Length: 375
Image 1 (spheres, rainbow, N blue to C red):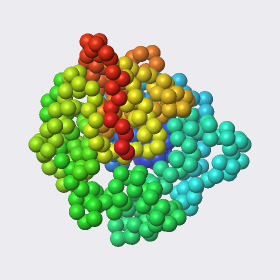
Image 2: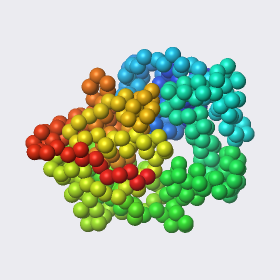
Image 3: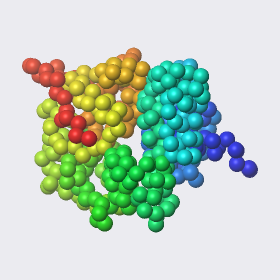
Image 4: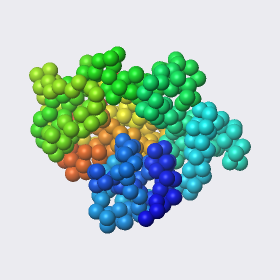
């Protein structure tokens, strides 16, 4: 059977996380299907198959992603077709010459005032056109690093559209979460592997893995088995030196477990996490939600001053690597239903029930924000 020419269009939408309601994509190796905008790590192309509807993917034996919830029907934004065209225009120009189109140029192209175009784009995408262009440029840079291993970092940066080597290190490093040279090496830093220690143990809501660099916790993950969590850590940092260090992390683990069980407020532990500006705003808002309470995605969006970015708030929650300490489980849908959760909806419900019970039994409920964001 000849390949469907639309598949290449769909694949490009997945690579750029462009909103496209014409399909969902499924990954054979995981058995999961997703929206084109899913924040999960992109799969290998040969593992991907496309379906016109979530129902078709489910009938083929795939299950819905818990992060992007492709089986949940949302009313389409009336401006989505327009924003999809703007996304395509930005992507084409960045890929062609590395330049970010100005709001004035985009406004002239789409017969909109620059201010109106900016508002519409941010409402649908959760970020500005400029920030979206930066993400496209970063993908260009990552492709250069992956496909041109002998090319210098500076040359890869120029090829991707960065104006100088200093901009490569200032902008790309913060978004990659490490130096570009370390990223190309798959978790190596200055010729040596990044050191990550971890511990894994059972909790009131299943297994918990804590992973830490020398600067602080880089992951707090929940799962059904210890092996599942450890395998995921190795997959995330394939070239890092990863060691089990129960003794080093014992005090932190005890504090997290006590908090999960509802016995103590959230501990103030050092974090070593990377975040975009928008993610940072969302995660700080999550940490301000009082213990035992919930907020809707819309309420979080309003708190950070972006009342129309509730979908983007949901995506930021889905990318959170620090369970419980950055309490994305406290965010629910506007109708009060739980919505999705990276580590399972049943686990989310269990966490909330424990918090509510513990808060009700405390003589003086505390707002209990988690430790300040250190991204």
